[in-house]
Length: 432
Image (cartoon, rainbow, N blue to C red; front, top):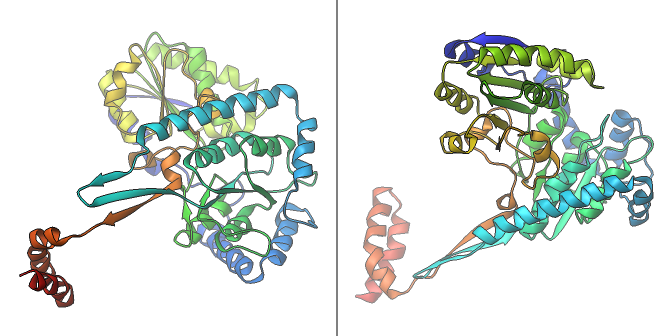
């Protein structure tokens, strides 16, 4: 990490233009254009050849030769015996809190509009697909954070795809799927999984919306099929911005930076503070704590781009936060709650001296699927509104035609749409 003093220097250092592209290690030689062409080829192949193409790509990319794509209920049930009871309890606690939060959101906003012949219907999507990354790690939390909000919203069917390991799908992922009441689970990952959910195959049904994070192949595939289906977002590397003052705990600050840095070499972990003393302490503490973590090389690579910005005032710190629009914003400052009203761009805000993203990642309640890469300027965390659609209903009577028909006719003729105008004029004539 490096320490930078002054608002303007910090503003430049935290510019999103300096954020690396969301490529996994080793992809640089191929470049986005090459990967995108490969992804489009996979999508077209799956669209044309269905399950056969999926079997071939799974063997090519995952090194797994499958005999079936769908996970049966027996395998899911057996997974419980392979998972520590403490983890099962933790997942159930997380699920309860995620469900409770989104149920409260539903209760607050779930009502249909009806006003003088005009109404708005709210309908859940019929079937959604959840992509759960696999590879070198296991992410049962992703299952809970995507499937449960969909269930609360009333989605009829939840389908899950996840890359298979040679030993099968991690038991923790299967247990999480059972707790979240996922309907069907399929052993497939990568661009081929996205293509299957978008277009459907002999075994995997087409869905209305695809949710979940993934590598560059997954993100480019989601981008390519958008319009055929809806997608939640194009998630990039995780990021965090800590706002701290002279009374902040340097050990907590350093631990929080490392917690995000260990996600990915491209993760972004930064801090802004009004205290140069704290900046120096956190800098030293990060170096010390880095030595004791298992993903040291990954976190170290991320932290090479990390910034500790020292500014003069809290106002400048807030300006930097809003410009950076972090996925996670930790307010480790005095009277943090009073600053919330001034934060306009953030995926999730954490307050208090003990503020930590980790609780939000797993058990707090709101979904950890958050806007990354500065998209908190215009987008929101995953929530129940991602799984519903609205239909407007217009009930027109004679009084509406008399009151509104002439205005509609004038606007239509101004736009050169004579047939539009005549349609309403015929009705006005009949009423005269």
